[in-house]
Length: 194
Length: 267
Image (cartoon, rainbow over all chains, first blue to last red; front, side):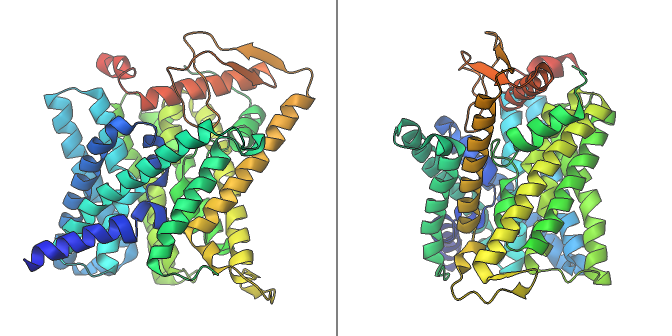
């Protein structure tokens, strides 16, 4: 029971309290890009969660058995190498089995982004257990989709708004809108803003 | 494709008019998360520039015939090979008093979206010199935004620059959070949009070119929508037009991989 509660608490924390995309800026470019494709949200949530969980579990095991992994340079090499390896194995399987070019493209966006790469670092810095790591991985995918959904709905509202000054139309308005959402999530963390 | 474009037109278009961060919305993570002060911003900007330059050079030289799904992993590995030794030297030789943010976010530069987008859209489809010029233009554009954000966040957030205090009575510590950077990016993008639109209006001798039906539009918010094709693209000269149109076309290809499948099937 404690395992399940640890997993759920960590996942909910990184989705709603400290949303990794909105309060840390991880994977924010990809979230903005995916925001205009609401039909793909579930697919991306599953893929990002899958890559995050597999990568963080492998990295946690390596961290236990490789003492020299305390260096940030060595950690970067291990985490990046594991992520690239996991992605290549999955991509090769998809390539051999389905030849689905769209799925391969989406796999690249899901696996090779700063959000998935940062998950093992967060596990290490927060000294998360294996179950916490899995919760963090699942939460990372959900956090990404929540951010993309919020950005997408806001972008559509901004496009319809005729009162925005010409200089702020498009990207500037979207940045400011994302800043407001980020401000909301930052409020949950209890950080002093003023 | 292998077309030749002048460095000046690529610099103007790649670094300024269609700035990767402010217009194309790529490389936002390193900008938002790692530019809390000027020193960190400068080091991250140098890392992004070097990563883009080396990766574009190698992509254009050696990866043209590699399958796309393999290339994107190679970009990560190349970035790590470049950044990790530097990180190791900094960490153990203590050449620079590196902040915690830098230790974590410097490796993340290896996986930044700007490198992947520019390599996929341009480097692997052009000769080495043109690919390097493109990465220089994009790297300068990203680096400039990073340095501006880092300086402003440090001044407004902590009332100092490079550790020298201005003794401000009022500071906004929230500027160190992503929200602070996003607000700066919003206003910077508005200034850029305002300047470029004014410049285009002033120039009477510019060439106006209408996109052909099989070509594409450049959406103002940096998203490239292949289904919307009836728009006039206006540029200052034909060279800039050719460069931008090719970039936009390739960018669409990279995001709509179904349409990009023929080339890989041939391989």
